[in-house]
Structure formats: C-alpha cells, structure tokens
Image (cartoon, rainbow, N blue to C red; front, top):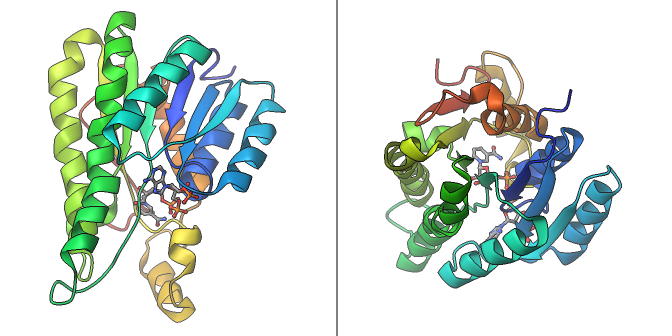
Length: 248
Ligand code: NAP
C-alpha cells in the first residue's frame, strides 16, 4: 500500500540534498509533488522528469521561499494545477557560518529570512486551503543546531530554534481544524551542504554519532512520510530528532 496516494505535497528546496530525497520518496509513496528551488534550473527539470516518470504528477517552481508574495503565488498556482494542498514541507535552508565577532548584519538577516521567514510565508500561504479541507500536515525542517546551539552558527541556530517555536504555535492554533504541524531536527545528513566540510572533521563526527554514520536524505524522507501520512494522525506540535542518537 502506498502511504501518500492521492495527496499533494509542496516541498521547498528540492533541487538537491534532503529536499530532493523527500520528493523521490514521496513520489514512490504515490504523492503528487510540487517542489521549489532557488537557482538550480537544470537539476529541477531533471527531477521533475524523474518524478513524472514514476507515475505521479510533479512540477518544479523557481520560487524564493523568503519572499512573501512569491509564496502566495506558488500556493495559488499549485492549488490551481493540483487541486489541493495536503502536505507542506518547509525544507529550504542555507548556512552562512561565522563567529559572532565576525558575522555581518547582512549574513544574519539572510539566514533568518531564508530559513525562518520562509516558514511563515509558506505556512501562511497554505493554511486557507488546508482549513477548507479540514486536513493538512505541515512539516518544518529544523536542525540539531536549533536545539543545542553551535559555535559559529548563531544565525543558523536562531533560525532553526525559531522554527520550533513557530511550529508549536501553529499546532496550537490550527489543531481544531485538523491541521498538524511538526518539526524534524536532523543531525548530520550527508548532502552538498555538508560536502563543503573538511573530511577529517567529518570522520570525527561520524565516530561521535551513536549509530556511527552520517544520515542520508532518505533517512529524513522516511520520517517525513510518517508525519505526512495518516499514520501520524494523532501527532502534532512535536519535534522528531533524526540524528542517529546524536542528542542522546
Ligand atoms: P542543500 O543541499 O544545500 O539544498 C538546499 C535546497 O534549498 C536547494 O534545493 C536550494 O535550491 C534550496 N533553496 C535555497 N535557498 C532557497 C530559497 N530562498 N528559496 C527556495 N529554495 C531555496 O541543503 P540540505 O543539506 O539538503 O538541507 C535541507 C534542509 O535541512 C535545510 O533547511 C537545512 O538547514 C536542514 N538541515 C540539514 C542538515 C544536514 O546535515 N544536511 C542537518 C540539519 C538540518 P538551489 O539548488 O536552487 O540553490
């Protein structure tokens, strides 16, 4: 049985990394997928074709998640083309790491806008149709860094911690409409975002993780399937840690 048959998902930032993994696993579970990206046009076209070949409806949209109006337009277009919005995955995110001593105001603001304001923008854009349907699942991508903090990532940690507070508040506001809002806090997931890191440092990290490996986009995607599907119908306001036991 496919767990997401007939449901439509919006996934932000799916041209690569975790978002791409989610899009692929969702299509395999029968979901129709509307995904966004920032600038990777070719990768997005290739993913769109790949997903369509899996027998679901899929479309990529170049849409800046940090822009309020673009989020509104995206939701309207997806509703028109797909007929419903059942699942929203706020996955788009960036890092601009620096010690507080050195970080610029611009790099602080940019990370907050793309990682946190985007979650407000997209959630605000989909709740009306979800309220009409009396059903919806919103999944927000935080990070172990949002829970624990990390030197050199004040901007990123603040954005990811902000997501958790926002998501819990949405759960409280919209529970009565059967709209659920949950957070995933991935640990170290090996993607392009982490490929920039020094290999020796990465080896050390793998050793420090109880499960002795970095996570894969699929590890995160499988938890998204659970939170998006009716298997989690009685779960809202929660943060699931997908980190190989890192925070234990
Ligand atoms: P990634 O490989 O760098 O991919 C980021 C994705 O977001 C890309 O598809 C990118 O599109 C898109 N994007 C960037 N800015 C955007 C914007 N303004 N509007 C729309 N889309 C935008 O990142 P990742 O490692 O898969 O991470 C995905 C999410 O998981 C992020 O929120 C990240 O903070 C979180 N996370 C990751 C890890 C990890 O270890 N990797 C751990 C914890 C949390 P383009 O390709 O067009 O640039």
